[in-house]
Length: 267
Image (cartoon, rainbow, N blue to C red; front, side, top):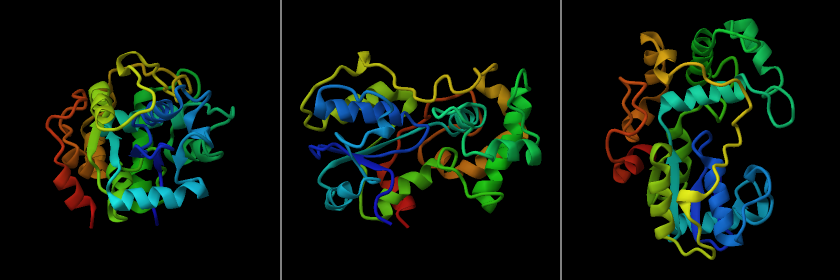
């Protein structure tokens, strides 16, 4: 299986396991800048030079060697399951993508037809999101009507691939305390070009794709929705210390135990 979704600076100073909807665009740009002294002009996911990626054949043996040797600082970034799945809905289901089309072609029409999701005009955001959540649960738990998409499949599943294939995390940061987390990462690696985390641009490549969220996060989740989210993302809540009982409480409620993460995700 190797190390899908893993990026590494060309200087091999740091390894990063990409997790969609968890500040991956900003992290990739920081890594790119640390080696090249400038940010990538465009969406960092489109870069083909200046950053090693598992999707690039030439990078795979280098990433494998460094990950399995466990001698290169390795990290990932996680996010509260409530805000992450809601962000996925507004970006991937409601939004128009960079190519000017709906995400994954016929996905949205299928959601409209089979689940009653609406995305046009002044639609009921709360009702449509809750119907999308049923769809997300069906894809993750039952793999129908399609396999789960990387943007709403569990963070733990993404993070586990690096562990089961012989890597180990030195740090797991959260989007909710992003600046402090990235400062810790940068303190632990050698960078060619220093940068000020407090004053870098935010590279939110999904911003503006869809309609603005009209309500506080907690309004989108009733008792049933909270039950579904916990059913889907139980490991994320437990391992990354998020509060499953309060959707409005974004930040982790405790420190991530790296030994626990490796033990539970390394099976």
